[in-house]
Image (cartoon, rainbow, N blue to C red; front, side, top):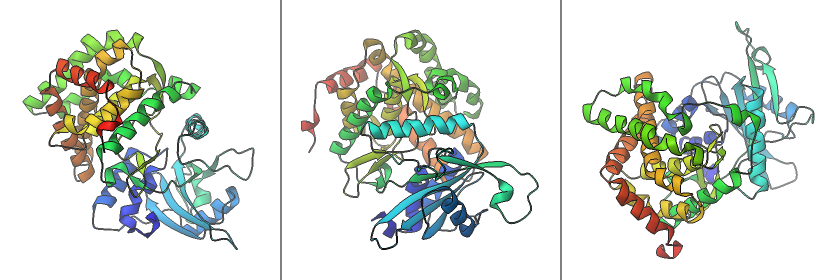
Length: 394
């Protein structure tokens, strides 16, 4: 059981379940999981206070609570052992600085939809008051015992905990990568059937549809060779991708299919998907490009070859049209550029954070390696991959 693992090791997967987690919180969690220190900032809201609010809002009676950390948002791991039962239920409780209520409605409905469609995800727990739904809004003065200068609003939310280990933490066989790629291809078709007004109007620079919005981040790139690689991405997006955008299939996308968002069993079987905080209505091929880019970032020695099983799995089920397939190489280049520029920017804002350094190293390496492979060679490899199946992997 994951519960028996050291806390610093467990903190990463627990916090990643939270669909509204800020990237600052992810940074803290990833840092804790990779450091030897288990020290955490003191919780702003005491465990006793959290227990009171959880019992008042949800059909849960916390038996143990563990603070997970956070900046503006605060996160707690909760165990609930029912009286007279050997069953232990696990949750993640989150106190979030007030966001657009439509955000919570959109992501909650997305998670419930995916669960209904057979996708394993952590789920929101409904409040005792049926009129409230899944979230409760509270003033900070209600949460803390001391006097507060600014009585900001918070939203509380309880999610079921999905036990397992992140893809980034397990031994990754070719079969496992293929199976996850296959899942991502099928997810594309499932998400095409879901829509929400919030996702339709959401605009974010991490959406490849708005890739050109981050050109201003080029000021953080000061190495000539790297600037050349990054400028290439903006060039091919303007000259090739943009003209194909009208032909791309549209739908909801997860938009952050990295190795920290796939949950696996302890013996290395794919289990489920977490963290829908970046979901948006966009072009469905973007999820495939993002997934391929992140799989390449898992291996700095030979990224394209390492990601090949994942690419094969994805292409076996994704049903790309000709314009999408023709743009896939460029879209992977663009996402690696996107990751590199965000990491460069964040390395200035968070200079002492090792997680940002790791992300920057991985995206730089994958981009440099991919650009050594001409597009026609990558296309040929990927077209060949569509004809092959999982029998290649043992």
